[in-house]
Picture 1 (cartoon, helix red, strand yellow):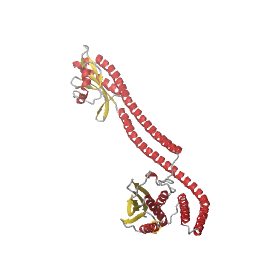
Picture 2 (cartoon, helix red, strand yellow; picture 1 turned 30 degrees about the vertical axis):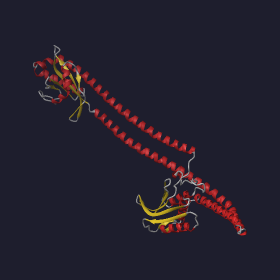
Picture 3 (cartoon, helix red, strand yellow; picture 1 turned 180 degrees about the horizontal axis):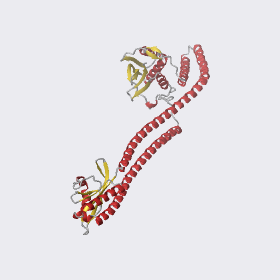
Picture 4 (tube, helix red, strand yellow; picture 1 turned 60 degrees about the vertical axis):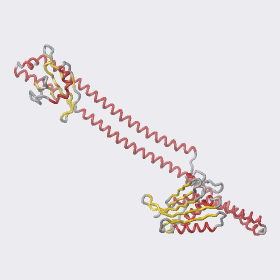
Length: 451
């Protein structure tokens, strides 16, 4: 993959920064909205409860004042007959109806019903559920109007207020109890639950959105690098096509002239050595041009069923036929039999030549190269694995960049050999990697998809 310039790297970092800032801003806005909504509904709970308490208190005080002046003496003394009791019950019934109360009744110090305006409780019944408001009732018997927190009983929410009924001596003779429905608080509770569910769903959507944005950024970067690589290869291809003809013709003339002069001065050993040097340099320049052309053009594969072991043996035989001053041995080890499968034999031979030549050049005098053949399964797909290991000095450079075009750890060469290998292997649907350590050699592994 081509290296990006400093300005392009800065642009990519800006894109990531903007995308991350957008995600963070969205998350913060969502959290702020949910938190503010939660606080609002909590405050609304408190506000509505206070307003309900004020309303009950005003109703209770007026009602208590009327009861104390018109009915309390008859109620507590037992005199006045049933007429006063019926009138008082009627008053409580009207109170429930006109003020939309849940219940209104009068109790004695033992929580025994004296009069119930709704006939929900019979006279003389002890209301045991009032025990939960014992502190509020105790305070009411001391002469202070009090209220209880909102209670939940038998599927209903209600708020209760206790008002002392005082006789002429300002002694508390009974308690007026008013209960108002608070079921509308259930609706607020559902809103709160909705906020929790909505917050969880929103966070889930944010995570999905974040993943999508990250994926889009990665895709943009890959597309950008791919377009840059394609543009560079296209430029290289055009330049290579125009330069190949201009360079090869003079090289052909130089080599032909060198051969003629070599024949003419064959008797002079020193001159013959110079002519060999010229021929070798011309061959090296031709190789550089061929590598440049190979890398700049999209490789077209000629896939056919071939035996990988036989192709490796041919490549090794060709390498061994060349004269080398270095004493190098090459061993082939097959750890798993590979049946013939489709690949481009010539292209794979080119990969093998490049890797073997690199291994040979790493040695100073002698060494050993071991080629291992095996198989590997990744995500259900089968691959043929070829490992080329040498016991040389290792790679002196950044191993993560050795497959980059024009990157080389050697003083000679175009830096395209390994880039061409990578291009060919990836065209076959596989991949190539390398392992190296100082004074422990280098191992190249490439994998070919077995269809």
